[in-house]
Length: 438
Image 1: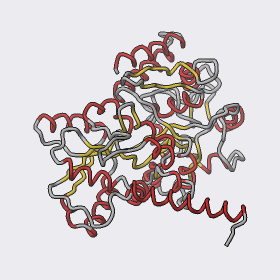
Image 2: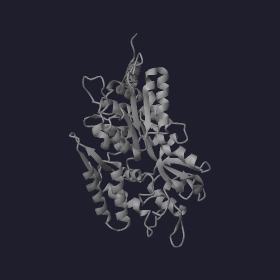
Image 3: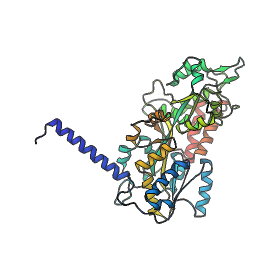
Image 4: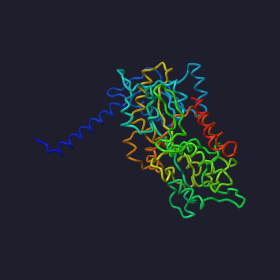
């Protein structure tokens, strides 16, 4: 039977879709056919909460009993480094680590990169990242290979007190920074005649009592077009926080200026100071109208104050900004160079990094899966319906060491707030000090 051009084009499209689906299954199913047997224990350590990972391992062990010797142990980000270094010294470290990109530069020399091409069975073609994963996962794609299988992303979001906003006539949160400062802020701020803040609008300006200050400043830089940090073909890092993509201006300077306005008593945007308790605590006690927190925090906020009437929204964007951006934490499962169980670690890495299992882990932890075709389907979850939308334009950057970076940003905000440096020299100092940390 002779096909007409239109029918022939449909057949070609369906064949292409079928081949693409087979490729996806082959690449990310974590092995096919008979279950692979793990002959020696595989240990995973990470900073992602344990319940979701352990649940995934339990389900896998019901299909393949060898997964009963796979274990996962959670450590808080603050304690991970010390425990990990001591374990390596005693040769009792894990085979795999499940960490956010915020520790990638710090951990890079200890992680075994997956080659992009070659004769080895275990490769991670660059095209897979572009075709199957969210753009933000490219942060793990460094010059010498892929530094793990992406598992989940946790976008920075905005939580808003519904009663506080509705009391002054707002049924929706601000969508742009311009509407926040020009329209919402004047009607929401509550200050006494001596400028004592009774109820804050946003928590910005200080660093120590803003839970996610690093993420907020990072998001502001991205929205202003910062080039962030680049890695060259030789593995060297170039700090370009103050350089803008295709535009003039200094993104870090713009971000720092905007951020610190909210903590200056003589500024019309004064809303926050260092005497306040942490911003999330003030939000849950209804002393803060808007809180910038990660998507996974929604359930935690519900538990802290079950009576709080709040909702989640995408973080405000620049009114004139051509590109939407927010910051987020990308999690990946990576193999350590020190493992003495390469076969077992490889099998577990591929299985937990497969579409089905990685999605399960992400959803259990109230995060967003990193596979494009899954994210585009959206979510019916009260928080997921917004975090899935934000995940598409969520990105991170290669900070040298989060603890050190936090200290550098803390110094910057203090220098600006206390007039120890002008804005220009304060942000230039940030770039210089960060460069020294790589």
